[in-house]
Image (cartoon, rainbow, N blue to C red):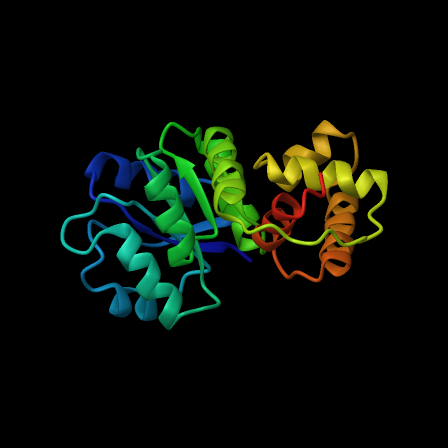
Length: 212
């Protein structure tokens, strides 16, 4: 079944490019493409996406405020920010608003599709430069905690470390020479041991509690 993606992007050239990439790639479908978020609720209900690809600098309602509203109204919907902005405050605001990933517009089409897939599967995805900033933000704002022994294996710690670097599961699988499904199985075990339900929670706990 195709991953249905609704795109919000005010640049008409970029909007057409996203539609072409999504509709031209097996396993993806552009459910809708819009230049603003002013009718966001109607759009989401009409297009029924699996993933929303959201720009920040939109006319009228901006992408971060729209992300917050969509997340509140449709909590199970996956949201991926794609923008030119890499400032800490934008990243922090987007994550607080409910974004499940944050990638820059210089990301290649193949990397963007990987990010959409990762977010769709329940993970999170960040451009490498953004991942480094996210780690810094977690360390800056996370309160100190008492360490807990989660009994992670060396392999699980290796995978968790790569997750904190913002690497997607397909990239991790290639880097450590394991199959994708094997890595997914490790990640599920990591979630169980850390008592979390998503990659964002796992990465946040790993950073806060200095697990890697």
